[in-house]
Image 1 (cartoon, rainbow, N blue to C red):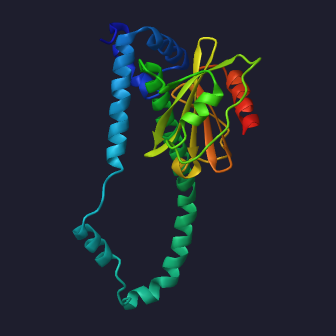
Image 2 (image 1 turned 135 degrees about the vertical axis):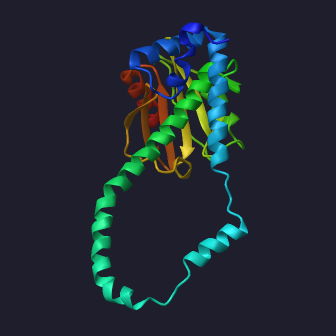
Image 3 (image 1 turned 120 degrees about the horizontal axis):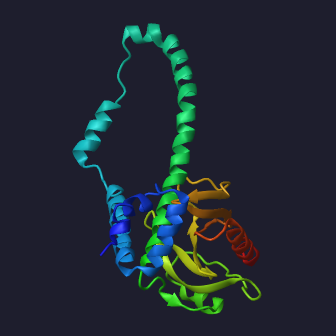
Length: 249
């Protein structure tokens, strides 16, 4: 059961609308409250199911026929021939006006990817069984993915670093499988997601530092793969872990 003190703030937390201080406090609360963690997981799973259902629309034959009819080539009317030069000029102006909106749409694509990854990270935090393979040994975790995802990757040597490998599992982004690696630094848990570039969609590979739902995020591309490091640890911790992973790759 969700605690009364947090019940009204749960949706705002999952949607990234809480102030940073409250979001961090809620994150700490989730790690110690089974009721709130279970409800968070239920709502995250519901959101993911709705998003997946929204991408499954397939137009029927009648719909396709209407579209084809609407775009069929017709003989241009006389007024169109007369006004074509003016319309062409207006089209140029319209494209110039809409270009900033197109760029904004690209940013929205970035935000959607980061939001989905933040949801996956929260689901992992809230889960009673956050990983499918439990091991601190990179030579155990990496081979576990063989046959489960369509690519391979290297894991860093963590000796003499503040990080501990907790385990890993398969996660999905836009219905494409990828790796989610779980690391711990002090009391913070960090998710490292690895997907093929084609699964990431509109997110831009040069966006190295961002935030999502009050989590810090680091991201880069390498050899056709896109890496995301996400958690409530400090930016310095995420930078150090990112450099370790890059050096392993």
